[in-house]
Amino acid sequence: MTMPRARSFMQVDVFSTLPFRGNPVAVVLDGTDLADEDMQGLARWTNLSETTFVLPPTAEGADYRLRIFTPQGELPFAGHPTLGSARAWLDGGGEARHADRIVQECAAGLVTVRRSEEDTLSFAAPPRVRDGALDDVYLEQIVAAFGITRERVLAHQWVDNGPGWAVVQLATAEEVLALEPDLSLIPTAMVGAIGAHPEGSEHRFEMRTFAPGAGVPEDPACGSMNAGVGQWLTATGAAPSTYRVSQGARLGRAATIGIDADPDGTVWVSGAATVRIRGRITL
Image (spheres, rainbow, N blue to C red):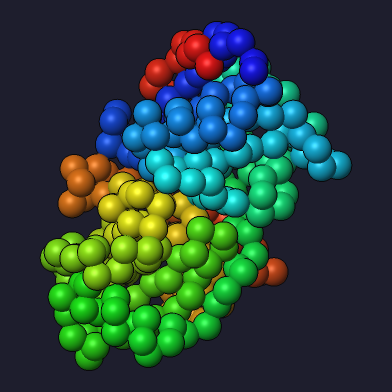
């Protein structure tokens, strides 16, 4: 058994420039020699949507390896933990192999995190492991849980890049914000809803994400869901190559997620990432 010791720890506010209005992620900057149960125990204790652990890389070309835990289990990939952990790693003295990008190794593979001249971070959306329309049975379960009729769903899609995400598209942001889901009807789901803001608004879409399957009833701001949805919408022409999403209003948050699709189809997901807490934690 490894004796507990003090380890560098940060908490990063992701996807909002307003203090404490984004989605926080807890980051342990040295996860070396921690057992799985230690990582899971801390994730339950922080009770955030995700807690991450930075480890030495094992893949060629990676700058570090990341493990990502929800209160109920480990994820192969997640978006806001990717940006938040990259920010914590840089602020903790991490030096990337390349000045303009960081390469994160995780269970989903290698994920590139781009650094702009203004030091804004964005990650390249990983390939989806499942796409296509939802089957009728699952769609009806979601519709029932959301308390809406099937006719209000404009489109639906698997947008799963690891966590298991599915999404339904409603006509308006107002409809998305009005949802009062009964998650007991979809206890293992990882599902989102997206709807358009009026023309001329600061944001193109409103997003809400519900993850009872990961022990997170509603996520304040979700990078992985927005990544998969961005790949779907930009590839089909249902959204422009560059747009912004607002999320978290029903939880008192003010998140903004940027989506930018390159001509080659690569989708970049960007947002603010600010260290709010730094110190040491004994593990």
